[in-house]
Image (cartoon, rainbow, N blue to C red; front, side, top):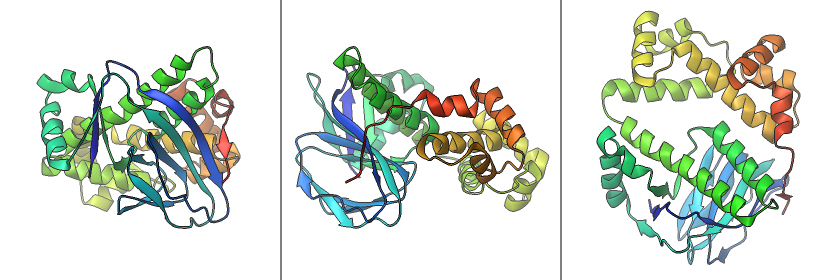
Length: 294
């Protein structure tokens, strides 16, 4: 795995961006560019390789393509495919492409509170990874697309830089989160909740699935994450619903049911409590789109 490192004392230079939507076997072109390309998956799977390393870019995952590196599709997508894309360059401050061992040493230093301030001065992006705060990253990407033709070109430069810093911060946090058996167990539980958020989840049901006493699991979960288990379940459901509101035309009722709410009104009430906006207004907040279908 290769990592991109660069100072954030100057913004990244946005070149172009958009959202690809394809419904019939998309195959990415083979090419070599002089820019970076950031891809963030929304729906379906993009099959692509970079310098012989193959990737399957799915929803809530990102891929960074490097300048002067060959990349291209390995096989056609199946069904609906949608992903955000952005071409950018790094000017004035330069950048490094480093291996996993060197990046791991850097991330290890940043994992402690004493060194965390250092992380805020640099972008650190792995070649491929999971989008931790998918709703936030999706909203930032949508905001970037809205600002491309804005008052100043620097609006897009700074919006892209904020997006890259959000992914960088999550990379640092998740690296520091790996460690003891209990923290690794919490990561496993969080991922299980994400996968099963459409089911009728409860604190008792999650505890039973993982062989814990409900009170013990709730206390352990809050110590590790700062959130109660029930709040995390609901936050995960709302996070996934936010992505679907932005990336599909499905009704609010359908989306509510898909993320585990049998009562549409309860979903709407909880959404407004957590986001200070209704689902409908949230969907319409980022209405401008730059989509390409080929």
